Length: 152
Ligand code: RB5
Image (cartoon, rainbow, N blue to C red):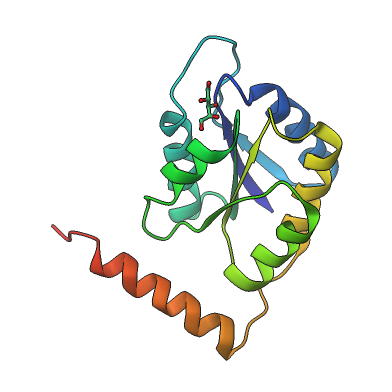
């Protein structure tokens, strides 16, 4: 699988653990940065990761900041992105099965690298539970997106 990944200054250390972990699982990783302590703005890294997911350069995206919250907010402003903030294994599985999330967000200041690796593995390997129930709900989410998108 092709995975795009990005982080801000509060998340890049965890990104540097997740990137080789994904590669060890056989995935192709596209790392958009950042790679430094210097303060940066999380939307600047959320956007290129989400763009890659939306244009097919990546199958899924992973975003990391201090809490994961800023990345989640920014990512979910982009029509077509369903980003979940996940800090436990149950939610990692449930958000793929129920919400078909295409971007995962985590907070480096919230969880340790071991839990983060488990979350990533579960989230990547869990399939969406196709079926009327979940698909109907996602259709309603898409209608909301369309209603709130200005088409030039
Ligand atoms: C950076 O200090 C921090 O605000 C950012 O990484 C993130 O947690 C925002 O939601």
